[in-house]
Length: 365
Length: 73
Image 1 (cartoon, rainbow over the protein chains, first blue to last red):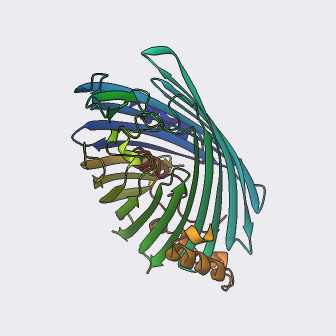
Image 2: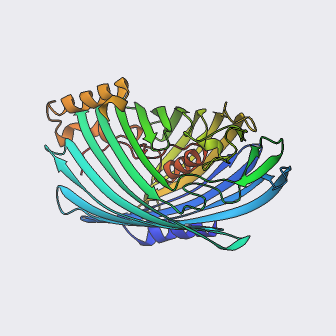
């Protein structure tokens, strides 16, 4: 709270700026995550600056498979800290921007950076943008000082914003990423997670998870926004995803917004659904046989790499005041959402339901 | 690659391409596009949602909730 108030006061002292503070929480029967965050931004004639800081405070219980094949629940707490800095210049119909991000949590340290640009065309009817990004992740293990896996990821994001008419806008997005990871556990693997392998002689082995050490991703998306009258709008988003592990997926989202009470009250609602196929090497249960006695090279216990379906429904109000003390605008908002996750190929936990709650304050000078 | 794209996405792509030929919307005609209802939720909420979704699904990218530009700069 002290940090959040500081951000608001900094914005007050920095004319032309804005500040936001927010706390979100994700709660399901197995894990609680509290996510406080602050963001300050300043927009000048030709220069934009931005800084954000957030924390994930995670408390949960996890299933641990030890080497003899016995499973047990272990509770744990963790914190992840994330800092993001950004700057942009916009001398005319074009602009350049740069970003840096740092994420730190036990066993993980990630540096990410990006540069990009955009250009307005056809009397600003069309805006094209391109961003290049790179990240370096270092992963360790508290139980193994020799463990040191590095990941390098490079990506390109392309955007095309188009004004269709006085009430309609469209956005096309394309994203390509390739990651080179350490070969001990591979990309997006959890070095603490073990996979049970049922051997042909009837014993159960606990084997460390291991994924391929290369991962290429392609995502294509579109978003259409349409104003309805003067006080309502609908937004429709769709994304297609495919990667080199043969995961394919579709994500759709419908959002609505409605202004009431002389535009002081804004109500938002959302419906999001996604479906995803499993990675080529994912199995609900791994086993060796007399014909194939070798433990599979790649094996994962990650349910996010299994087939899944998810639905999220939510919404909330936002109330705004204008000309409050030094602020041009102050708004407070809250949000409540319910999420369902189904992992039909993950027999350990085929369903998961969660509440997502959040609230925050924004101030503009 | 084109064969991988589902037909709804191709349709939307085509729609956006064709929209380039639409009549120019002058800056003073863009008030509806600048309305709060046309703007996305706050950057922090979008980031929090992205973080939650990213830890529950393998899918990443091309779902920036940053909304569409109104070309108002």
